[in-house]
Length: 305
Image (cartoon, rainbow, N blue to C red; front, side, top):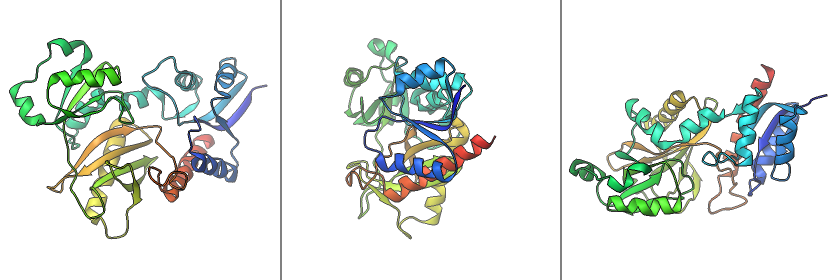
């Protein structure tokens, strides 16, 4: 007999206890059985899924390494997709959206505001030289980031020449690197005009995020104009439509001209460390709870299908 779970979630248990508990709670309230694929169980779960001993209707992927094909969580998510488990989000779709070098031209073509960018393949590094026009548009200093990087790993914020790509490559080996104009958010009394915007199955949540200190803060009434809030939501929905992603966050800055610019395009497997667990870098508890509830609501609809 095959043991079937309604919802399983991959997670490394780094500290997201509130998020995990809220997902479990909402699954219980919805009558969905749930299994947490933590590191202790991931190999066992993978083997049982491969042998057809267990199956899941929905898998919420909160941990897998897109850039490491041998990573056990990466392999588990791919196996689940092959076995017709409904994965949030499907691995091929998530990987395509996460790859900045692949997504950037699509965002540009769709008219979504992004920094001026030059994409440099690692294979071209030795011979690569910026044109004079590219140097002018990039400005100095400019930013270098690996295409598949995350969590600031491999990020160079003070690049001045092509050779600074060596620093990024040494920190994060990748196939492609992005040279980008450095975007400075508009200053304001309570911190930079910088936002993290979450898209979850058609719902959009916006929050302040200080790109210098990593501190999150809920947006109070009247702090951002209705037009500004609408623009943040519109950008998030356009990215979702373009990528097909159902659960991701984007980093968006407002510059002095008032324009909103997307700095980090698609973060899947969103960081859900709660503010009660870590006041400095945690996501506000009410937002963690709202995201968990929306994900379980979506999973319930997927299970019903």
